[in-house]
Length: 355
Ligand code: COI
Image (cartoon, rainbow, N blue to C red; front, side, top):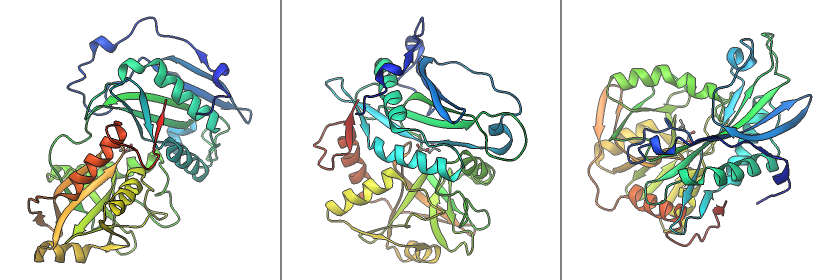
């Protein structure tokens, strides 16, 4: 990977490690972080002072724009350790591109590739003992950028902080996932920020998702804001529907995140000979397919969620449970994907990149 910044990253090592305090068999998603983080500040129109340093809280002025206007973006990526102890990233170039697309949409400066990639590679190298090998284990990587400039005037900040933190992870969802189909609330609108990984997109989902949680649903599948007739994405993952033997998923748009797991599954499924139809999927056809038995599977796809079967959905207060299925596309694709990610099978797509 690019190496030009290598000598410029200052490395301040932690004097002790927390690793022995961590129960790697019982990790809650995103709750534990490694010993170090990467940080680089944007000031006076330049990225400066890239540093890897011990993970700890930091100070910001109470008027920093991130607190008032939510000028903040992030990415979700994963690294995996193979059985030779080498660490591999999955499609990091895609995360990098999407990060900068989000930055542009949120009027933030783009992060140079060398800062993003060298920061990430050197951080993973330093905290490599935290990346555990074996099926189900991964290192969840959270690059993010916040507006650190002071002052509550509502305009883009002059100053920013880019950071990368690492969290050892197993699965995102621990039990069965049931979803509620949105009838009133919306995640995104045309012309809005739905395609960006902007922090506010996630915060805006918390209230309706909490209402859904209270009714026993883990997630909401969002519908288009204008008509609420088209199925779009769930807030933590894109969604696929299997009707008979065809996989359906909504096209990415201004309202839908261009998921990297989503696009990888589409490519893999096609290669497996599965028919994939990327087109608007109507709520009415889902309900009809559930009623006539042609709806075989629904599953979510995302970096954190990987490939997660959804066992049923509720729409207009009617719950539709999916039948148990023998040859699940979700499980088949998940196995193929995770085997590539863990280097257990040949990566014919060229998606994995060694750290
Ligand atoms: C990811 O899958 O990486 C995401 O960013 C979703 C997040 C809600 C955990």
